[in-house]
Image (cartoon, rainbow, N blue to C red; front, side, top):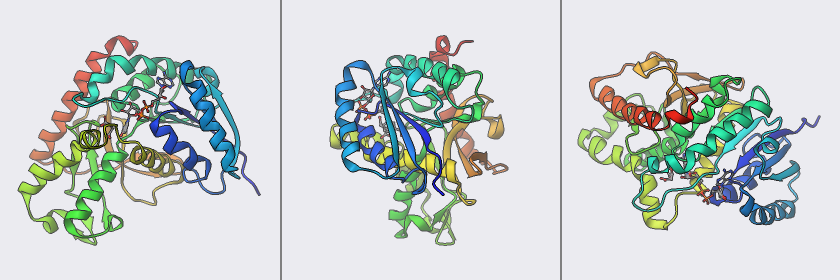
Length: 328
Ligand code: NAD
Ligand code: LMR
């Protein structure tokens, strides 16, 4: 029997990431090859003609699972009854900027969109914030939607998680599929902390296998943390296809489950691991039955505490910088 269509909102749909994302969602890569979708696409008014062109291309794919497309510049239309909301639309940084430099430019977008989600989205909507600075924008959206459960709001650290897997696979000469229990703690920024202490690679403990603390601390951690900037430097544009891929991974795992596998999501802290309640922080989670659950009880050593506190400090500063947008 055919499933009923679900509604998927993508903001900034005519942008770079949108162009890599929409076709994969419509082909069933995000929610499964048996799940029809209605795409509800939000853009700013001047970009509606470009969005029209993207929608013409979607039509030309004749995707069997694409049950409808809405194009709009009105958040209340884009988020109406939506089940999945991918908040991509925001300005990307250019060379020399840090992601937090975007706070002023992008923060306001997420109050408007959080309110619209609060007013018109499905009550179990799954929200993924991709637009930078992703953690703090997710915080703004979550605080602007007081009627929705906080666990509905997440920020994208999956690109960092995937980068961490790929760098470790290269170093150890193993496949990414052989790595388990990767974690990237904290902010989607160079302060993030890719933690391999619990990782196994092809059944062996990653720390033992790497056996080079200096490489881990001085090369691996900064390479993962600064990968976004390295791509901007090389491409002249911020990452797009890999970001769209990470968004698909994040939503697919949340919706369809991880079978016990750990993945990193930016989620609202419940106070675990010394991260104050209410901060959106990269954490290890498993997903089942459409819900994410924090991996609890991990030991935090002195080095990890220092790294986790440094990225927390940055998030607290970002939060303080947008206090006026948090409604408190
Ligand atoms: P882009 O400039 O190509 O596209 C952004 C689109 O958003 C544009 O079409 C723009 O018109 C639209 N937009 C702007 N304001 C909007 C609003 N209020 N409502 C709806 N649409 C709006 O940028 P991109 O390369 O697609 O990147 C989008 C965002 O994603 C940037 O902030 C970028 O930094 C971020 N990003 C995050 C990650 C991550 O890992 N979290 C990775 C890559 C990029
Ligand atoms: C990335 O990590 O590639 C994105 O967040 C883009 C950026 O500004 O680094």
